Image 1: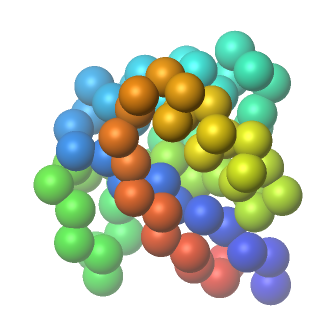
Image 2 (image 1 turned 60 degrees about the horizontal axis):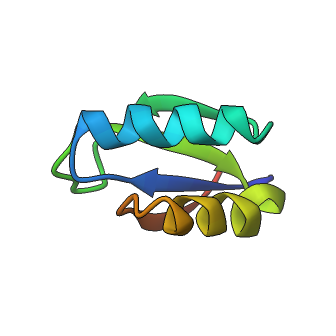
Length: 74
């Protein structure tokens, strides 16, 4: 099992903005639907490998993109 991080956002616009920022920095991520067992204001989230977590969250914080981290074993 590999640890994946789900980054949850307040709305779809922020998910798409975060996806674009990560891809611009060559950080692999995927936009996926929020799993049903997780409560979220937005129906989409960003799936990020755990080894990219620090860089990804640092960049999103620098860009003032609000998010929550949810750790999930996949």
